[in-house]
Amino acid sequence: MVAGAGMAGLAAAAEARRLGAAPVVFEKLDRAGGSMRLSSGVIWRHRDFRRFRAECPGGDPELQRLLFERLDADLRWLESLGAPVTARDTGNPLTSGVRFDPEGLTEALIGAAGGGAGVRLASPLHELPDGLPVILATGGFAANAALVREHVTVEADHLLLRAAPGSTGDGLRLGLAAGARTGPGLDEVYARAMPAPPARVEPGDFVRLAQLYARHAEVTNERGEPHRNATWSEIDTAQWMARQPRARAWFRVPRAALGERVRDRTVGEMVDAAEAAGAPVRREAEHVTVETVAGITTTLGGLRIDRAARAAPGVFACGADAGGLATGGYASGLAAALVFGRMAARAALGKSP
Ligand SMILES: Cc1cc2nc3c(=O)[nH]c(=O)nc-3n(C[C@H](O)[C@H](O)[C@H](O)COP(=O)(O)OP(=O)(O)OC[C@H]3O[C@@H](n4cnc5c(N)ncnc54)[C@H](O)[C@@H]3O)c2cc1C
Image 1 (cartoon, rainbow, N blue to C red):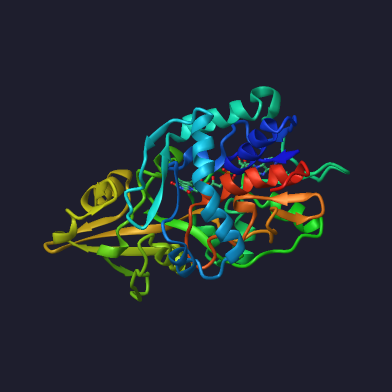
Image 2 (image 1 turned 60 degrees about the horizontal axis):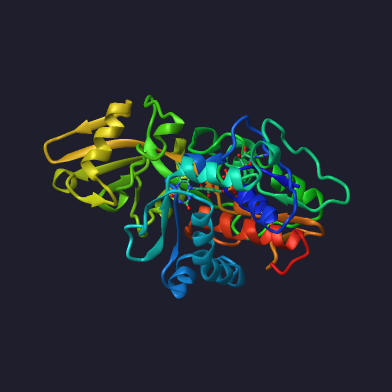
């Protein structure tokens, strides 16, 4: 039995079917795919394990090693299911991976998980079944403002939810009730700076409207206090923003930097997109300033798991329900969900994970 039809849950169910089992996936929403379906679809790892450790120092080295060593084979498996590849590199020299079309990726996984017979939509799992192994893959607790306030930031109500709405912490609750413990980094989130209100940001705009140029900007909070971005992923800026008054930051960019490229867009294009969406943008002779809000994308902490993705007897956790992978920094949430989803399925069926 699997809770959650996102990346981790569908990967687990597809792997279980490959092994001859007939798992049932319970999905809370009336649509499968979770945040995977809204994502950029880039499934990646660091090229160098030491760099992974250095960037995510609070994570469990053994779990990180498993992710690092298994991802490439798991990406080939995804392709073998018919998931459509749109790029064979990440555009980042520090990382390797594959970019999939998120819609096609979701459909391929649903098919491999048994289609309509295997995935029950609009069926939340509320309690653990007796005597059956269960895989918790509910995507963390980004969509639960009370839990985010308790564990992450008092500014929780001001965060923009940049994720699918079903991930309200059910896996965490069910796992703890079964005797599991939490892992490291329960207070950490992955977020992106997004256009601030009155901008309108629909789920289909989550990728397009991300403001990923803190590295080129003077970043301040509403009291004028500065923050200097220090990472390529801008995770430190995002974590900082989530804790600032009203989760707001102002990105002041020299006009000379508007032509700088960050991945496939220029800074100027990202600013224009924020302005067109309705965010407050101030254009001066030498600078452009954009008001942004932290858009919580996924929680990074969760249940503590062992090398078999086990959180408690008969209870497995994967994806954003499991902590200990990206702690202290940022690593691909899709990659962790894929690798540990498959491992959880093997372990739940009594096979070597
Ligand atoms: C805009 C955006 C861009 C992103 N880009 C990338 C990227 O390029 N690369 C990357 O690695 N990561 C990216 N991510 C993060 C990535 O999508 C997540 O890390 C990943 O989807 C986590 O997988 P998961 O299975 O844990 O959660 P999800 O894929 O979100 O699936 C969880 C599912 O569980 C369901 N659920 C919740 N509670 C219950 C319950 N009680 N019973 C049944 N079902 C339940 C939810 O409705 C949801 O469908 C992005 C995310 C977003 C939102």
